Length: 141
Image (cartoon, rainbow, N blue to C red):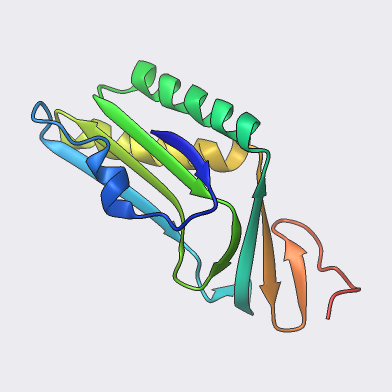
């Protein structure tokens, strides 16, 4: 399972996609929208992506994770569109015979995804909006 979607992420479904009798470890990471960032009160976020390219890059990460870590299965789902505080923006599940490679792979996937996959986050807060890692748009209200 590697997917970009506008619909809400259901973490149990992502975890079920990697579940198998051969594994003793299942790790699930869920990245949720928080109510603050850099001293500002966040109202909501919007994620934008080029789905075909993002899914292709996410599939590459999945393949690389199999090469780098002793794991059995990986699922990656990222949401696009408007998200409210508490919504799941991304979910990554990894199954492995043992916990250490499952944790290591999951962390490597989310860290690398944030650096390499063409998904853009816009943060809306009291008094403005900003593309994350960008400057505040002075024209926003």
